[in-house]
Image (tube, rainbow, N blue to C red):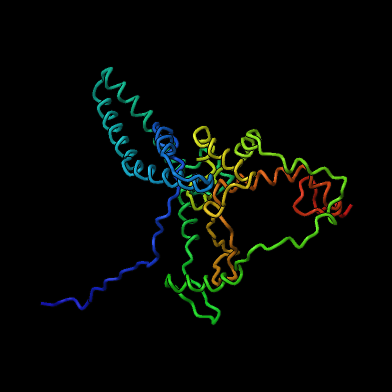
Length: 339
C-alpha cells in the first residue's frame, strides 16, 4: 500500500488591531418609524448639570445609551432583506400555477413596499461609508459603492509604520508609540496669559464693530444649522450633522441655550471642546508618521459656535484687513494680484 508523501500545512492569517467600541450614529436609523420617538425619550432624560456645555454633553451621552439599546433590538438589515426576497420568490412561484387570492395580492404588495424601504435603508448605510461625491444618490447601493467603501476601510487602516531608525513595525502598540512620539511635541499644550497684540494699532477707528458684540439670535443659529454640510464625520459625541438637522426640533432649545451661555461667558467648554485627531495619508503607501496629515473632528456643537463667530466676522473682515490680502477671503482670489 502506497501512501502520499504530501504533508498538510495549516496557515492562519489574522491581525491584532483592536476594534474600536466608539459610537457612530448610523444615518439609516433616521428612516425608522420610531426614530424620532426614541430620540425624544433619550433627550428628555433629566440631567443635573447647570453648566450648559456639561448639560449638553450629558444629554448626548444619555442619547447614545438609548439609541444603542434600541438598535440592539432591531433585526439585521441584511437578514430582513433576504427574508423578504425569499417570501416574494415563493409568492411568484405560486403565481405561476394559480391566481393569487386578494389576501395574497395585498400581502405581496406590502412585501414589495417593505423591500423598497429596506433597500433604501441599505443604500443609506453604504452611502455613509462611500465618499465618492460624484456618485448619484440612486447609485449609492450598487456594487461599485460597496467596493469603494471596502477599499476606503482598508486604506483607513495603517498596516505598517516606519520608525526614525528605519525599522518597520506592524504591532499595534509599536505603531501607537511611533505616532505618539511624533505628534506629542508638535501639538504640545499652552496656556493663554495675555494678548500681546495691540488691536488699536491694527484696526481703524472708523470701523463699526458693534455687530460682533451683539447677542446671538435664533435666526442666526437656524441659518447655521441649515447650511451645515452633510455626510461629514462626527466628533467624539458620535452624532453627525445629518442627525442634528433631522432632530433639530427636539434638540434646538438646548443648542440655543448653549450659544446664549457662551455669549454671556457662563460655560466651560472643556467638556464639549474635545476632538478626534485623524491621520490622513498624503499619498499612497505612506509609511512614516511625517507622511500623514492630522485633522481634528469636532463635535457639532462646537462647529455651530465657531461658524456663528465666522459668519459675524465675514460681515466686517473686508474693512479691517488690507485690500492686498487675498488668502481665505470670500470674493477674492489670487488672480486679482495679477491684474
